[in-house]
Length: 103
Image (cartoon, rainbow, N blue to C red):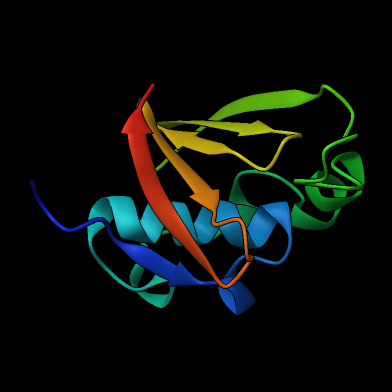
């Protein structure tokens, strides 16, 4: 089995950060090397405000889907980001973000 990519939690404190980190892991590059910015697709601050309490057990059951860099991206209030059917989540300790089982 291939090693699961991990992302430093500091790179995924907000939903907008996790989206970029997940896309970068999915494309096997740095978030700085992505061909576009999240701001070109949507307002990252609005995304973060929509998901107030992101990843918390009592988070609102909200989800948003959009396309970025030809990838289908889903953001879920429970802290998951799904890129082309591959789920990225923070670990229980909040110390890293990793690719989990495909959805």
